[in-house]
Length: 166
Ligand code: NI
Image 1 (spheres, helix red, strand yellow):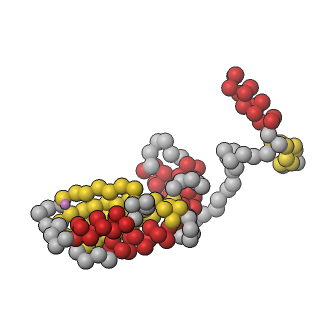
Image 2 (tube, rainbow, N blue to C red):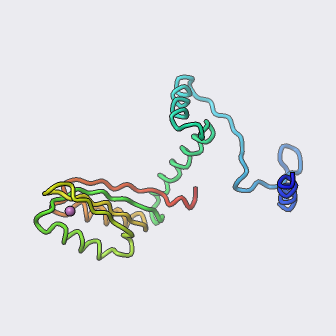
């Protein structure tokens, strides 16, 4: 009961706005707003299967919120100048000085590359996961530089929003 009373006091301090014909506290970013969504029944059934797979802690609303955050984070990655995080996974030849070339690139961009993990896959191949944080265009440029290095056989760059705005 004490917690409810405190919450009421906090609501009373907030500016008042007209909502649904009554003077109410202005919404803050944590207020939940309900809206209805229409979709084909079979799509909704498939969505409910996805919700079930996410486990008991997630319901339809939680999963919709996750999907909206995913879409906003993906949009952030496409926005020039946005600060994002990127993981670049590569597989490359152990021989032929490839490691030296990759190390030189990583030293050139030490301010953006925040960590890396090296795995010796077999006698001839290494894997590295390079974690970066910085401006989206710069991370893509560094990714292309590393992926374009002779001896790098395959790789993939994945960009993510930092979660700051979602
Ligand atoms: Ni190795």
